[in-house]
Length: 340
Image (tube, rainbow, N blue to C red; front, side, top):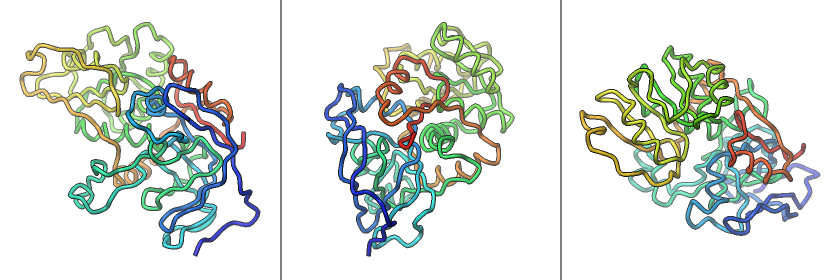
């Protein structure tokens, strides 16, 4: 039995991508209805992620088009599907990138649902958060800590979760380099500071604003990615989607160190000499997130407490926010607010 809040309109505004490499367009669409295992969520905020750019710019293959992008969603439950028993109408939830898995394959059964071959992703194969309402599989919705406003919480759903997973893959490294200092990096920086580790921030050459921001977030050093690391690193995490940073990061880490590629898309990695990988250096990638990552990070974030730097935009200005991100003209995270 579907439960609806009274007085909800039957239509909604949404920004829709009709085809890759086109602007998203404002449309008036029928409000979605939740399936048996889904929630209907009235969206309060949706952060803009670099992965949204990869979808809009055609760098990720075969999106469902037309598609409503966005996968860092915070809102309140407006209706429950008939099989949902662990949420209530009115509760605040977050919806991340990983939106559905089969629950049956070897990866799902072993707690590695982020590798499910049938996985579907919010804002890519499932309509996402550049809208006033969305539906989501209740298994992949998470309660949001009360310490955060809707706008503050939205970037935690990807920049925070993927950043946290990337940091976990770096192990107990004491000296950590981050390449690309944007939404994810400024959250990870606070986790590193809380854990007493040392951060070295590498930005686009000449990006003094990002370097100053990194120093404000606790970096011991900040400079261009064209510069050598001032000290050998135990680990490097690459958030910028630039394949040319991989050889640079391999050169920066010590023997036995690790380079973690934190993005879902990266430009081609140039050939590099085996010598910079030798001596048991490791190069790994991060794929998506697990529910355990979300539960751990959303518990940890308010304990630190992680503070999120944001800039808000009305829903209709999604293209402006995407352009600012594409051009590297954002400090922190851009967040769309449908009821701006």
